[in-house]
Length: 202
Image (cartoon, rainbow, N blue to C red; front, side, top):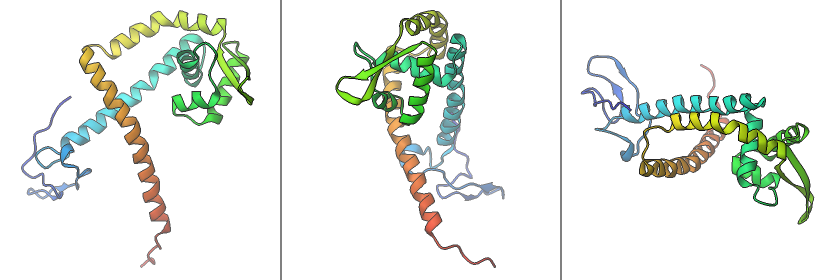
């Protein structure tokens, strides 16, 4: 990733540059995220995260297409494979694992069951719940996908050492929690805006 050197006109408080051009205010104020008093590096990191996030969305689409599924169906299928264990997984646990609403996961599970890729049975520990697991057809589908998926993921994470990948995983875990709290902050600030009396139009 490129790193911008601080411009002479960049100031901690933002404002106008010495050449008369507008200088936007800082987008972040934590000292750890500033370089020489500017947020240029921070803004570039955010932009490149957005670029990566946009590209990442295309991989589940490609994996699903390889199996004749939507990206959502592929995501539920592979998530089930990883957490089903020997007895299957409940819908709530699957939804929590995927950070998705349970009704969304329930709908997708139903479509995969209809397609013969998942199996559903009553949960013996919860008369109202069900346990979901891969069917033999679902297992075969993921076996067919593996060579395609392996080549894509090897390219995606090419060049990372074992230590770098471990650090990356820790950082992503932190960002998952931080992003949830940031969304809660957005909602709180928007509620404050909605509750603040609107100034009379001049």
